[in-house]
Length: 164
Image (tube, rainbow, N blue to C red; front, side, top):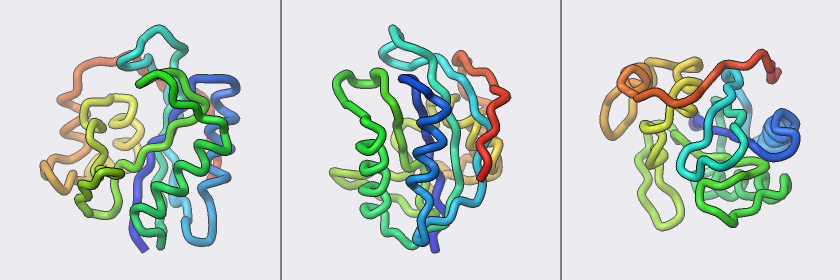
């Protein structure tokens, strides 16, 4: 079993329902969800003329191989009607693989640790809520260190509780 961390975000439609449904669809005998961060409402990055996002990070254990996990995430996005029309644009759901154990993966289809997670407070804050001492296998910096060094982005913790 590998410990994985996934980032989930939604800014179209019923954002909370999309997060809940994505978690339901991710959960399977080959993927056990261990913990879910608090939910944050965050300003969009890149394409800013869109609604704010709801974001969270979950920790799970899985027997799926990295590309199998990527395929599972893509199936869940398709099930929730994700459309990729504008880079960094609005979406019903976005699921990113942040970490796959301590593996470093660089392929045409997958980059782990996620290429831009260290620049994104909307990922670092919920990830730090789960494990601020988690160490990036490439830079060797902890999530807490990266969060402390990250510049401000519009982010606020919500009262939404997503039960495991």
